[in-house]
Image 1 (tube, rainbow, N blue to C red):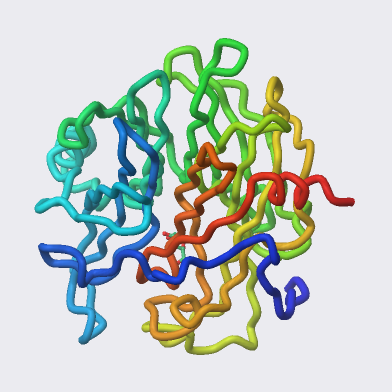
Image 2 (image 1 turned 90 degrees about the vertical axis):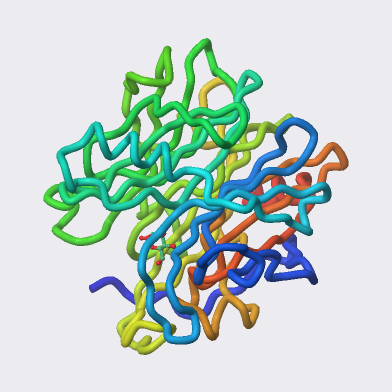
Length: 338
Ligand code: BMA
């Protein structure tokens, strides 16, 4: 058992938006209970969000299934949810390529605009393991599935441009035999010439490298480009056996914080800066109480504005969607501080 991490606070660089939570099940015009872990990007002149919806009965604390919802915004703060979930047909088409009955659900979407098209990575639960998927759309109604991983892998995050001519993504395999039989999961990177055949796996950030994690890491929002490098978040998980009931479940002993790092622009396999403290740790009421799993922050969307403001979109307590902002210069400085 690794030592507990103890109390953590958010970096002073970050400001939670006063409108938080910015999206909840109450905003969704079809059955919804937990609305969280969304991907967000700017596409065709407005903000687009694909969110995870675990539907069921919020008051009774029961869940019946998962779909992916769609929302748009003009300011990145106030959202309008489309009348229907957006990925049911694509999920059915994907399911038809698997063994009958194998597909369980798609979830935790991340959006990347690359060469004018909108790409979505997502996790896939199947009866034969957890997988990652990559799809592309032009209208959020029709999706082409480009590739899926073998189990166990998820948390794929696609870079918004080719680097050295190749597409690049972060990912998080879940090695068990080779990592002591428990959750000791790291952030990896692979590249591809065609978005389908992913090659050259490289260990990028190991859980041992992060002082505020004692369990596992995972890529979070797709990276944004700054003059000093690719700025990207990751989630860092610590476990403390002293924690008890922290949400709907009888026991929830993990905490998910957000970390931040800077990768070399030409060689993203090289970390040029890593914040030694969390960018964000659960603190606000909607992050620490009343949720499905309290003490969880899961950042899936990051938008760099022309003004230098960075918007972080994150799922809070596996229950609602929230927004926090920071200045890109402060974030780069946080990564490069010694
Ligand atoms: C991970 C994923 C996320 C979730 C997190 C905390 O394993 O399932 O979707 O936000 O756990 O429950």
